Structures are given as structure tokens and as C-alpha cells.
Length: 246
Image 1 (cartoon, rainbow, N blue to C red):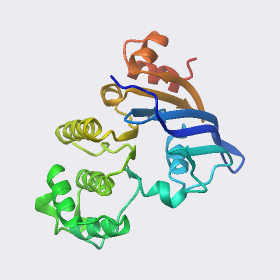
Image 2: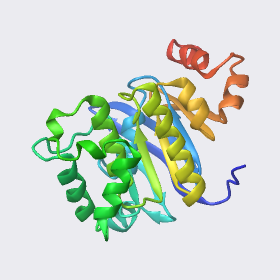
Image 3: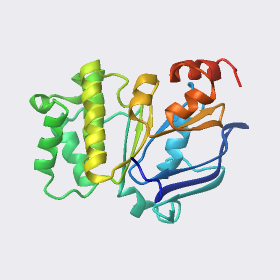
């Protein structure tokens, strides 16, 4: 059972305004060491915007983010060296092969002895036989596996995953979930995870924060949230909130 006593990400009163519209509206939450936290909500709810602020890709309009007890804006380089991410919405250089892309990012992250690390990750995601293929020739599923392999190159302490299994077939998606759980159990990896697969969210998440229209509307374990909304499963909760239920 996860013991939630060490906060590694602290978010307070986080707000982001785009052209007068609040994409994220005064949200506060914590992420604990070794936790898999599900970030759930309909399209446009603010999930990707939150992750981008946690990665310091975009600057909050107001609020505070602390990671490993330090202010993200003031200690950006130090913090991000211990963090990584995978997203269905980020691309890699298409003129490079899988192997070249992995070596590029390994050097960028300062990974030592990266050749064996790369080989091991490509085997883990079942793409070792494709390492000489140009990235532009890959299917969406293969690209998703490459993004995930890239995200583990620097042995991150925190991993942000934005719909990482969206393009994977059920078999590879299941293997990916199992591998993430194994890494968490082995190394204490902390994961923030978004997905529109409600079964996946129930299976993976220790805790869920549910946002809608930029507001935090529910927080707790998957079972707690299901019981609070008096529904049979997380998908029914999602539909109720997305369609305007309280």
C-alpha cells in the first residue's frame, strides 16, 4: 500500500489564462513520491496545460509550483534533469532513425553509457528490430513506443505521461502498464498520467484528480470517486461530469 508522506510536486493556486479565457483556474494538488496520479477530464479541461506548466514549457499566469521542495521557476535546470515526459502530441525529428533519436536525447540528458541503456529500452518496448528505420516511416503505435522509451532514458524520478498509450494496441498497452508498475515498484518512480481509457485509469491510478473547464471537481482513489458520484465505474463518472452533472 502506498504511504503518502513525501510530497514531490506541490501545486498551489495554479492559474493559466489564454486570451482572457482561464484554461486552468486556481487549482491546487500534491503528488507523492512513488504515486501514480491520474489526471482526468474531458478534452479542453486543462490537462495538457497543467502538464506543460509542470514542465515549465509555459509560464503560469499565477500560482506556485514546487518540485522536490524547490521552486520550479528558480531551479528549472536542476529539477528537469530528474524529470521526463511522453506525449501523444509531441513529435521527434523525422529525418533521424529510431537509434539516432535515442542517442540524441541520451546526449541531451547527459546519460552515461547510453548505448546499453538504449538497447535495453528498445527491447522492452519491442522495437529493437526497427532501430534503423527513419522516424517518419513509423506507425502511430511505433511512435508511441519510441516516445515512451525516450522518456525513461535518464531514469527520471518523476514521469509525466500525456495519453501515452492512445495509439497502442491492447497487447502493447497492457505490457506498457505492467512495465510502468514494475518500474514504480522497483525504483519508486512517481507518475502523473492522463488517459481517456477509463479502465486504464482505474487499473493504474493510486489516486485521481478530476478536472473540468479548468476547475478541480473531484479528488480521491478511483473507488472513492466512483462511490461519491454513485456510479458503477469511472466511465459513468466521466460521462456525468462531461455532460454537465454535478
